[in-house]
Image 1: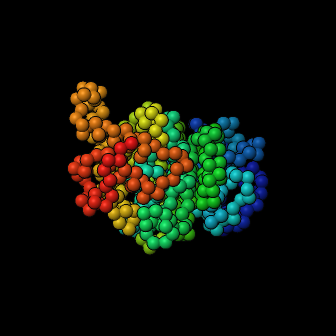
Image 2: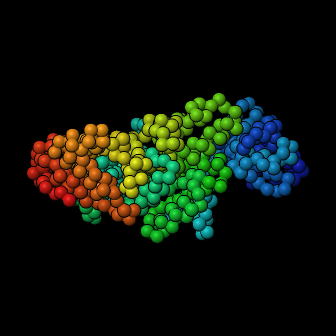
Image 3: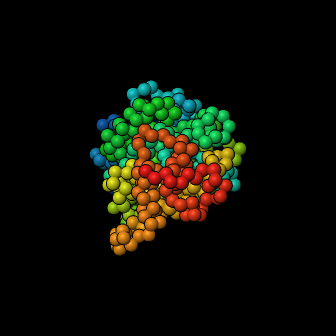
Amino acid sequence: MGLLRGFAPRNDISGRVFRLPLKEYLTVKDVFGVKDIFGPLMLVEAVEGVTYGELTEVRLPTGDIRRGRVLEISDSTVLVQVFEGTLGIGTDNVRVRFLGKGQEIPVSRDMLGRVFDGEGRVADGGPPIIPEKRLNINGSPINPCARDYPNEFIQTGISTIDGLNTLVRGQKLPIFSGAGLPHARLAAQIARQARLIAAGEEKVGGGATALSGFAVVFAAMGITFEEADYFISEFRKTGAMERAVLFINLAEDPPIERLAVPRMALTAAEYLAFELDMHVLVILTDMTNYSEALREVSAARREVPGRRGYPGYLYTDLATIYERAGRLKGKKGSITQIPILTMPEDDKTHPVPDLTGYITEGQLILSRTLHNRGISPPVDILPSLSRLKDKGIGKGKTREDHADISNQLYAAYARGNSAKELAVILGEGALSPTDRLYVEFSERFDREFVQQGETENRSVEETLNIGWRLLGLLPRKELKRIRPEYLEKYYKPGTRG
């Protein structure tokens, strides 16, 4: 029940005296009993003055306390989502306390190097952090007029990304994977190796430099204990932990927590980026698990389902996560985002990858065919795309020939694959000598450019040089997408292996 403003009440409904500061009575509200319970949700009546997203405490007769938040408000009726589930809760023997604030997490520079669980609590056995602030995890929408355009190259050390699907600071570039594909290992490799580089200071390769103040925020949703242990041990073993913040929600944890994990991670990233001027890479895995949790809550709320049972607002909900990446005018820091999702049955038309593709600026697609051939990471470059690639490459950013060689590699690889398909139908004897060169190029491209060890960290200059070496298989007259001055400088024919 709502409490009178300015007066500390003597007793609550059960006769127990409140022990809160006077200011708490302005916002904290207690209700004894609930109207209905279904799934992880409970319907509470006769409560006023609460807000959407407000935190609640559900107090059981045993003394246990479960946390929840307000999902929906209609007049004096409130729908509460219970994080730990409603098993064992009756309709007339619990007290619901509305805390007068949204879900928050404590933030400070000390978050770097720490592991948190799906509720934002320290999960690495260390002491709690001393917060500099407590921030609402829902954040604030970014005014489009305040956004700065992404135009700076991020080096991941992976050739298929750096050379052909370049990641740019402030971009949203998802990875579309499938069950059993090594997206977890690819995510860990990106997190370990990612660096923002620009011309000027400490040389990295190709005239580029690594900038300090780079951090990784890693959020895992619905993963197994083995996967969580792999991520944590990899970060610690390689020394990347000192610049990383990890939020881990396990498969055995309440699915409801998964809805908060990416928002907690992005809140931490916004603090590091826009208040501490750091360049933050946010990796979210697996967004399909997040969407399944959203579907579960939607079904419990008895909402009319959309495509494949997902709620009709799935697009909007995903956008509230993806659109929190970017750069702000007047701010040195930035947030770059790599969401990872598994496509059920490798179906790109599934609602989660389909809607993700609309919101984000491209996608990296992992290929089961390449994986079965032992190619790792199995990035299928032909359907992959980075829409902001051209903004982050070129002279002063990577190298002046980057755009031309990228275009030529795409064209040559596509023609080589077409020639291989033709050979399957008509036989290799039907191929011209030039077609055979393209077939050889395609096969070597997979083995030498795409194939890369998990600990192999290639500079962008190494990646481009591998591309030039492969193009040496082809006659100069076939390289029609590269400017003559770059051919004179970099092209070396006859490098067959």
